[in-house]
Each structure stands twice: as structure tokens, then as C-alpha cells.
Image (cartoon, rainbow, N blue to C red; front, side, top):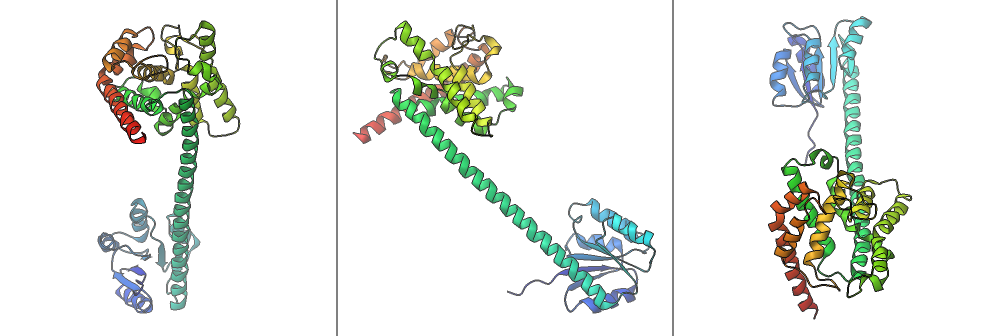
Length: 369
């Protein structure tokens, strides 16, 4: 396939200059001979040239006025403009260059000089395009590599979270469900314009994956307590409560070895505050009301609801109806009232997630059996 020739637009009100210019350039380029700046802009609507050779002294719209208009339009601003003029004073040349011209050739011009100037600017534009393509490709490569690193990070953290879930003998995808519950709550909050300012400051791509580390501190709790098939003693419960600070401390240690903390900041808050209660009776710090970070108040709802509907070593699962009633009764005591109102509006979707994943779990168990 024959390579397209560069397009040159020669703009001059003198017919003799147009004829001469076209004769000099037609062997190497596709040349448009244009008698006025007004006509130039009409043709630019249909054709984009590689270079514009622009006379300065023209009636109606001169070259200076034309280049200002060219540079003001994003569609034509990057087209190289070479001024052609009979003026030879430095002031005129400086003015032309300051307006954005890439070169300035005095008339009468020699054919070899004109051709060489055009070749140089075409080469320069080609190099600029090549550099832009390289930078664009480099950016894509960086983004791809960054995404790969993020995917690896999420995979590692997900594996850690799943190990915690396995040790806790929790079945049915607690981590997966709590992330889905959180998304339902956050989406509804944004829709209802509740806590919008705070939520808008979050990176949602990081928020939900970070929630899977909310129970990471259970790694530090013994199996005998995690999987006890009955009510914990006071002493055992005091140990169990430490999983919040264990999780916070573990994430703090990870943060010391990395400079990217947005993901871990959310995870740390989820881990350390999801057992705080609105009335201040929660743990580990007895925070009350708005002193509890919003992430912790959200996770409290997702985590408690899922604990109620899930089977645990020490209890049978509740129905979604029973779980909803307990959640509503906790309004203003365990839970942020505004968030419980949002939960109530979304309770049908919570129930669907709970029931669907329970059915899916039973299906998977039958397949494995």
C-alpha cells in the first residue's frame, strides 16, 4: 500500500506566488493553493494539513490574525505554521514566532531552502508523534503493570482473609457477603445524599477490597476460642475482643514496609472499629457516635447481619426476618440510626444475598460430596 504524501497548504493572495510554490512542492507533497485566510478556514473543515505556509500581508484577514485563530482552535492549534513574508525586520519575525509560528521564511525564497525547511518541520512533527505514541504506550504499560501489582496484592490479601475465615470455621463466604452488603449501603448512602462528603473522599476501588481484612486479627486468636462450640467465658471473650487490636497492629506493621497506604488505611479502620457501638458500649476503645469512623459503623452492620444469618460452631443460622428485627432493635444503640434506616431500605437486597449464597453453598457442598 502506497504511503500517503504529506499535505501542504500554501496561503497567499498573490496568484504568482501560489503557482510558484505549488510547482516547487508538488513532486513531494500534495499541495493546496489557497488565495485567502478565509478560504483556508473553509478548507480546514474538511482537510487537515501537515504544514501551513502562511503569507502575512493579505487583505481582509492577514497572517497574524489567521494564526491567532488557528491557535485558538484545538482542532488546528497543533498544525505547524511557517510564515512567508517579504518583511525582513527582526520585529516582524519575533511577532510571528511569538504567535506560534514554527518558522519564518523571507520572500523571495529559494526552492531548496523552502523544501529543506518543510522537511525539517515534518521530521520534527514525526518525532513528536513518535514520542507521544511512546509515552502513551509507556503509560498503558505502567497502568497494566500497576493493575497487575494491585491484582497480586488483592489476591494475597484475599488469601490471608480466606485463611482467617477457614480458621474461624465460618462457612458460606462471610467475606464475600460483607463486601456485597457494604456496597449496597454505600450506594444507597450516595443515592440519598447521606454522608456524601465523607464517602466522596474515598477511593471506592480500594474501599471494598480492604474490607476483607476486617477480621485479620483473628490470626492471633487460638483455635480453641475461635471454634468453641458454645458460649465463651468472660476470660475467653476478653481474649476474643483483642482480634480488633491484633488486626490493627498487623496492618500497622504492613504499612511500615510500603508507601501506598490508601488501601491499608481503610483496612486498618475496618479491623479496629467494626465492633464499636453507637452508644459507646463496644470495643476495643468504647468509641461513641460519630467518634466511630464511618467505615467502622458500616462494617458493624454488614458484620453483625452476616453473623446472625450464618451458621457458627455455637449457633444455628437465623432467618433473614429474625436478623432484620434484631438489626432494627439495635438502632441508636448498637448501630448508627442513619445507617440502620438505609439498611432497612435495602433489607430485601441483604436477604437476597444471604439466601442466594446459602443456596450456592449447599449446591457446592453436594458437588464436593
